Amino acid sequence: MHPHHRPPRPPAGLARPFGTAVAPQDADVTEMVARAIARQDVLLAFQPVISPHQPQEPAFYEGLIRVLDETGCIIPARHFIPVVETTDLGREIDCLALEMAFYSLGRDPSLRLAINMSARSITHPQWRQVLERGLAADLTAAERLILEISEESAVQMPDKVMDLMTELRASGVSFALDDFGASYAFLRHLRDFMFDILKIDGQFVHGIAHNPDNRMLTSSLIDIARHFEMLTLAEGVESAEDARCLTAMGIDGMQGHFFGAATITPPWELARTSQGTSA
Image (cartoon, rainbow, N blue to C red; front, side, top):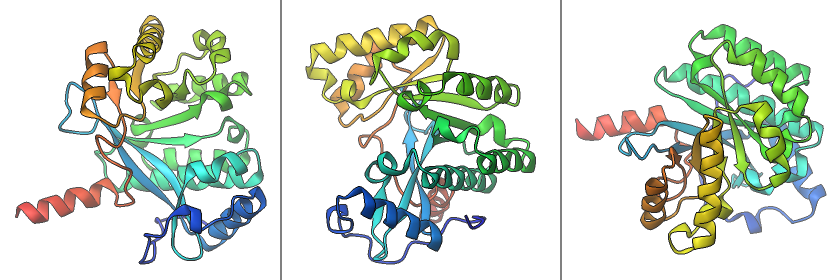
């Protein structure tokens, strides 16, 4: 993997949809990701996470990994992570995502950023090197970094995840459990992990204002989180009605297209643009 000291600049012309950029076969996706890494065509897209108590200002951002195909089309993580997550390419992607997260944290001292990772990367030497180098380079980075681990990934190696959490909590790093509720098999591990944030899976959030079943399930997940003194964050919020419903239910944070789609323009660049416009 080439060192990534700055995010790559995507070429012009990013409008072509994913379906015309990559064939659906796993081998083609793997090859596309490998070529993108070799070209350093990997970047983060930033999506705001909003607190219902202070909706005017993002509580933090999630950095979502993206790759560019040969035509410059941006490929979202959902189209390639499931294919490469268990492979060496998955470890390279996690290393690049973490390195770009530290770069972003260094560029904006007010930024708090969540970044996705697989539990499989915990024991990967290169990922550990990126982590230790990034934490040593900026003493404020740890308290502004949130590591997101998916429920599916964490349940595969709970001991490694708990060891990492014990190690990094002392330095101020926070942890979020992604896709909470997607696998009820994980509930028996929840007491042992003690994540800081539980991100409720979007399947329970979408249309919640008009779906009593989803309200009941989400309410139960919120109660579980409260019992263990963890914050809750709803993923996939797409309407004002759903946002109001979740706020009334006591959700701690929300994320989704209603509050803002992921953008490859970094938050500090958005702030500069806004300041320039107001001037």
